[in-house]
Structure formats: structure tokens, C-alpha cells
Length: 121
Image (cartoon, rainbow, N blue to C red; front, side, top):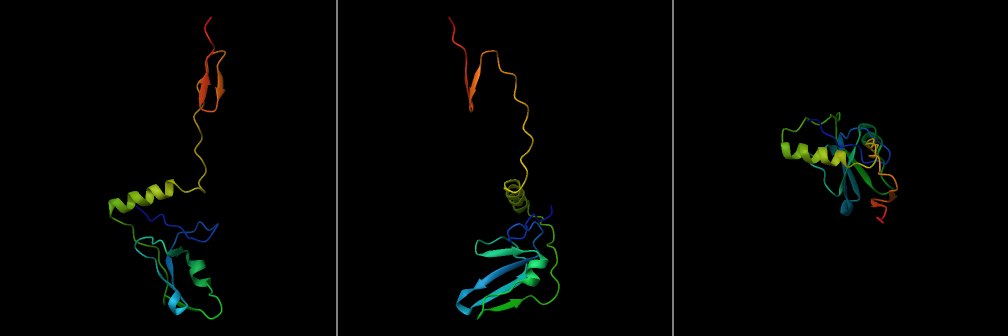
């Protein structure tokens, strides 16, 4: 299964090929090859964003020498499953088309997920 990790930059849907990590004590941003697992305090970047990253004044950027390459497919089934679940839960994906609602019996009123059935005399 292919990696589904995408660039962390807002609006970018390109595949991630690099990982950005900050060393705050050294005022350094480190851009290296894509980490094997997504970490909470690091950011996945596509090639364009990894190459164009700049740091604030007084900070240093340490960048991986050479080309960034797409990660190899993982043979770890648990990792593949976790990545598939993460991809399915992404909010930028279009919602699947909903199934048509079954026809309501005559006189039925819908209130959200509840139905009010007509009373019997």
C-alpha cells in the first residue's frame, strides 16, 4: 500500500517527501527525509515546500543534501491500516453521495433523525 501522508501546509495536497522539525534551543529548523512515522511535533512537507522553506531572522535552516524521494510502500499491515483510516477521515475529501431516503408512510413528519407517526383514533 502506498503512503497517504500529505504535505502539512494548508491547502497543499501533494505527497509528503520530507519532514520538518524545529530545534528551538538552537533556533534551527531541520528539513530531512520523510520520517517513517508521523510525529506530533514535526511537519510533513512536499518537495516544493521543503525546498522553499525559510526561517525567521536569527534562525538557521539545515536542509537534507540531495534529492527527496517518495517513501517506499510499507509492508507493515498495521501502519497501512492506520494510514488508510487517517486518509478516510480527512475533512477535505468530498462526502460520499447519500443513499436515497426510503419513502415515508403517508402522514409521517420528520424532525431531524426522528419520525412522528400519525396517531390512531
